[in-house]
Image 1: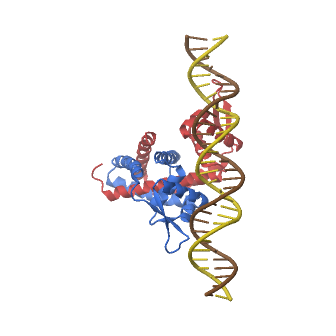
Image 2: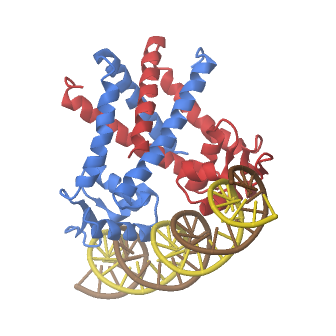
Image 3: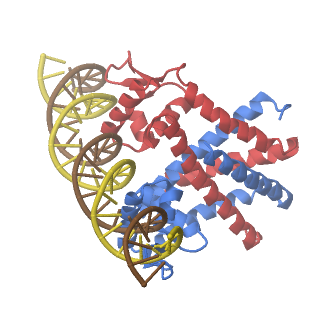
Length: 151
Length: 151
DNA sequence: TTGAACATCTTAGCCGCTAAGACAATTCCT
DNA sequence: AGGAATTGTCTTAGCGGCTAAGATGTTCAA
C-alpha cells in the first residue's frame, strides 16, 4: 500500500508487538495454572485444535520439537490426564494422541475466561463492524501463516 | 453481549487461538534467526519497547524470570552485541540495560518483513474500516492486558 | 523372506531455570 | 554519623527438559 500515513502504520505495528507480547505471556500463565510447562501447553493446544488425533511425530513437526522431546511431552500430558496414547490400528508403529474429553475442565475454564473477555470486546461493535473485524482477522491469520512458514 | 449468534463467537474464538499459536511460533522463529533463545528474544523485545532503559530487576519482573536467569539473559544479549550493561549513576546497585542502537540489523530486518505483511493486510481496507480495526485492537489489547495480569 | 524405510522411545550430555545465599550499595533509624 | 535493615545484582548447586544419536519395533517392497 502506498498512501497510508506513516503514523498509522507505526501505530498498528505497535499494536502487533503489544499483542504478541501479551499472547506469549498469556500462554505462559495458562500453562502455569494447568501445572504444565509452556511447551506442554503448546502441544496440548495443537492436539486440541487438530481435526482428528495427531501422531507423536506430527506433533514433533508442528511444534518444532525433536521426537525425543515429544515423547516426554506426551508422558507428562498423559500422566496429568489430558491425553491418552492409542496405537494406530492401521499402522502399529504410530502413536495417536487422543485428547481426553473430560478432565479438560481447567483448560476450558481458563479459556472460558478469555472467551468472556472476547465477548466483552466484541460487544462494542455492531454487525457491520464485526464483519470488518472478521475479514481483518482472516486475512491477518492467512498472511501471517505464510510469513511464519517461510521465515 | 447477549444477542451474538453462537457461531460468530465460535469463529472468533478459533481466530484467537489460531493467532495465538502463530504468534508463539513467530517469536520462536525470530529468535532462532537471531541466534537467540525465545527467552532472550522476549527480554530483548521488552527492552526495546520500553521508554527508557530497563534495570535487570525490572526485566525479571516483566518477563517472570528469576533475577539469576536474567543475569544469564543479559550476559548472552550483551555478548551478542544487542545490549550494553550500564551502572545507574544515581544508584550504583542497579544495572541499566541499554539496547545498542546499531547491530539491531537482523532484528529490524525480520520485523520489517512482518511489517510488510501488515501493510499488505491493511491495504485491503479503507479508512473507515481501518478505524474500526484500530478501535478493535486497542480494546482487545486493553482487555487482554487486564486478563493476563489477573490470570 | 529379507533389507530398507519408518515411527517412536531411550539415553547421554548440555544448557537454562529456580532457589538460596553472597556481595555491594543505599536507606533508615536513632 | 554509624550500624542495621533493605535493596539490586550476581553466583552457585541442583533439577529438568531439550537435542542428537542410536535402539526397538513395525511396515513395505522386491
